[in-house]
Length: 80
Image (tube, rainbow, N blue to C red):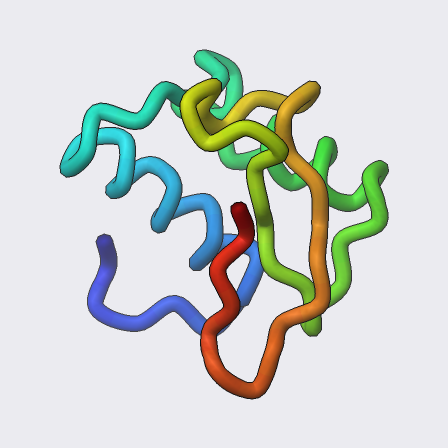
């Protein structure tokens, strides 16, 4: 990941790509390759800076039909 990313949505995109490499979590191929595709999905599905990306079923990975936005807690909340 670049040293500092100030855009929270782009930071989210980098983090899911990193998690895919580190933990073997699956990520939608379009999201993996393309920041604009992830950004467009996020904005269409209600992204705001105070939300975090969560998976409905953690075993299914990061895919459009398995992800949703949830308000961030003061302490990092677990999504599943």
